[in-house]
Image (cartoon, rainbow, N blue to C red; front, side, top):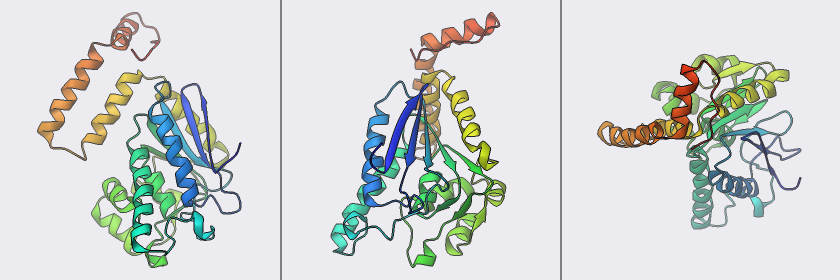
Length: 264
């Protein structure tokens, strides 16, 4: 494998791994370029039902790669216009990851900070090992935050708790993150991979059309009024109802057998 982002697909589950050895999987502009390409490919992959995002080895991501060569950083200090253009490009990658049609899972081990935390917050599920540590970190670096972390975590936790986490950054243990609702579940380090795969395979066994439509329902709750949401919800519901998978689900239920979904 070459590059900083590796993608493999197995049984309808895509594994996207950030691999920046020696940097605790810090994310440079190069990493985001590769991640953006992976997201583009996955968004057009109908056979992929679930996407797992993880870091190689012992950390999810410590955030921005401050030690990267100037030419591979997002913020380089060359000009306000150039830095703005690059950061908007990176922000678009985060937005596209959040809006992938597949269900997404962040498998979090070790450090998850700054931009790394923003990436994790953009996933649909976050499974953390018991050694995971979270930190918003931005204010400590004299920065105001990027990649939608404030928006995403405010949606997850509410305004009061988001203010506490971002205005007074401190390390947060996995258990504390679970208590807050920042992560979905906490498991032992040695079982993180198995726990994540278990959830991924459970999701991947669902009817693909229904899974994607349900994710669109959930995403739309943040972007539209109830009246507009209901119009789109009806369209998705009727499309699913008329699918072969819905007929298969009904037949499997009536005949007390496991359904076999095709995505049609």
